[in-house]
Length: 265
Image 1 (cartoon, one colour):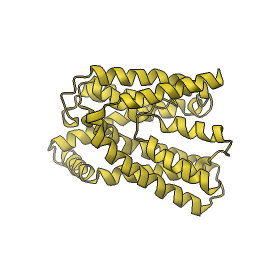
Image 2 (cartoon, helix red, strand yellow):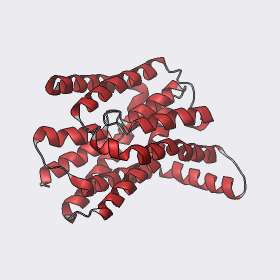
Image 3 (tube, rainbow, N blue to C red):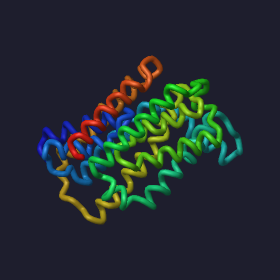
Image 4 (tube, helix red, strand yellow):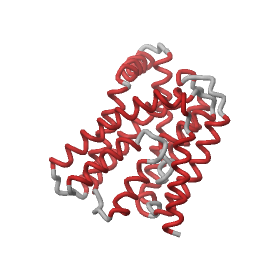
């Protein structure tokens, strides 16, 4: 790939992975619109690695406390709010893992069309707006119940559909269950750690099965750029979400979906 597409797509991945506007949709659509060659599995692995490192770096204190608490809960049976949050992240990842194994082939082929993206962008955008408008916003991520975990976990599995947005649908599910905007966003971002690891692992396995020639310069550049942009995006989004809500992102989603319908119908 040329340098401009590498930089543009890496920035796009870093921005859209954690904003509720669907990174998968944008990474599918942008090369199509500009006539760029497909970025390939190597690029996908690189930018997923960059965003994974970003979220782990941003939540390093929480992840350290959660890991320590989880080990204590397993070894000594000592439970704390950190161990419960760690278990919530692990159990909340199960639905998307199972769905990924069951539907990976369909997602990679039949669902990568502009019309699917358009309908998902609009439809799930409306659901995100309803959850933001009607949610009670009374609890944080440390108060999650089994019912909350199940609902958010199943919602994350729906994000396999391009155009849904993993962060958007999980934040919406958290809001619907009564979490605050920042609490729902933090749980969504923590939930992204195993989800991104699973996605990157799956893509890495596909790459091993059908290796591409790796151009290391652009690949490393894409990883770093995606990671830096993702870290900044998390920081800004968490500071703004309680004040601005999700309505601006919903408006963007609906406009994008309508444009896609106008172009491709």
